[in-house]
Length: 430
Ligand SMILES: [Mn+2]
Image 1 (cartoon, rainbow, N blue to C red):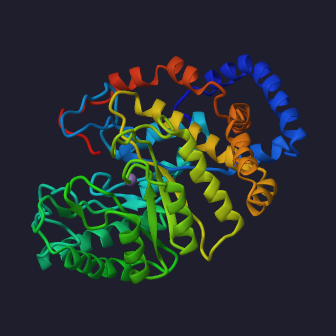
Image 2: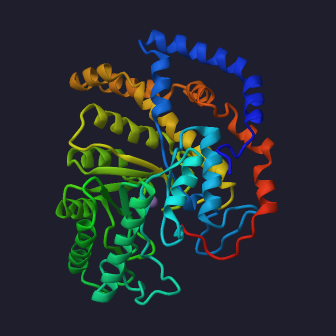
Image 3: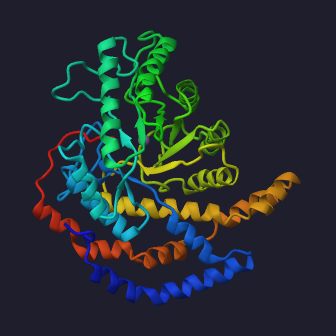
């Protein structure tokens, strides 16, 4: 095993040929920002410190309920997924964390898995439980729900799985558990809408009780799918109610795709922060529904506005404000490594743009009710091409200025197609 799955020489050679142009563009942007009173190197340092985790399941081809089209050389186990995540971090230098999900990423030796990740310069981020699908040796079915099931033995099984995830998380250095349930209904009258939430909160409280004192539990809401009439934790309101009842260590996780079209997600972010319950994010994008498209591929402006609220939150922190950032998207037609590198760059770019917002000017314009000046102040940051800052941050940390060019020149996927066993057909995890 090597900490650098891509040849370091290849990265160096590519950077050497791209660095002159980058220096020129970085200097030009530096002069432009300086005229606005912004030191470019300080922004670059913020970008270097910024990290977004990648999900282990994101390393494979996703699918829809119609089909999955496997990619030759895609990973088939957690070890191969870690290797792909290492490629993403080696070239992009902004994804040091990997978020595993269970039971799929279960191994016999978790201490060994943690060492394996560390050798790649990776750490484990939030652990994710999964009670939306039955496993071969499972006693109770989740067909009609898990933590909110009417069947006590099913709820108990879901509680135990979540506690198992916490125990695994302790061994791999995680401090967060993300809980998403697909529980809900497809017919009016199928379930009592109030009592379903009561059962969910009661069952989840047993998981909460098993949290170590320095852990955070994050509740992820999702409007629909797999339940198409009602979901138990469908929206931020239900998530907030549950998190407030469960306790201080329970917070809400916002997945950008899990909202009705056109919902003002940045306002939800501000609201959850006000309640001290903003726990984390799953970044992706959507056009029509929860289509899990690449982050910022459809609406990068929305992503910027979300980060604008996060920077505001950072300047006005509530107790325990320490949001966790993760990419959660489904790659149906691209190489997942390329998609996650692209998304990580887009996410870091929106973060950088939010950092360069002139907060004093914005606040003054807001207080003066100068609508156009407030809007233009925000827009000036969004309109800034921060590409040279991101590239310089990558270069200085040993990543690739031209990550796509280096990745393709490395023939990594072609090599893995020879080494790895082929994945089967079937629906992906979406
Ligand atoms: Mn998600």
